[in-house]
Figure 1 (cartoon, rainbow, N blue to C red):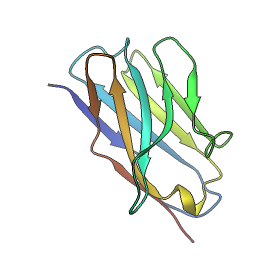
Figure 2: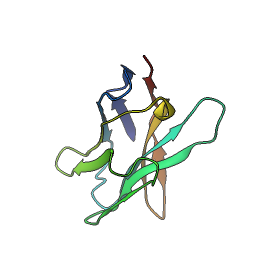
Figure 3: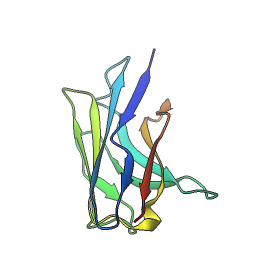
Amino acid sequence: QVQLVESGGGLVQPGGSLKLSCVASGRDFSGYTVGWYRQPPGKERDLVATIISGGSANVADSVKGRFTISRDYMKNTVYLQMISLKPEDTAVYFCYVGSQVDSYWGQGTQVTVSS
């Protein structure tokens, strides 16, 4: 059974930092694309960043220079380091793992940026 478990969300002041983690279990995801999407209140889910197997990262312009995605193949884990957070980064952040055959989503973790 495939499972994605996210952690690291929370409340942070503007300018602060958070690091999200997503541990995938149930199979070997080393050949999959992994990434993060987010859904602000009342809006659609949008790409934040993805990283393909053995390849480079794709990061949304809105977070470029502030967010860094990385993955640990041995731990089947993907991370999202977020710095210089802004109120507009407030959203539910979802972990994604996918290929041309199948895809999986985490349950989401809330990130709130507010003073």
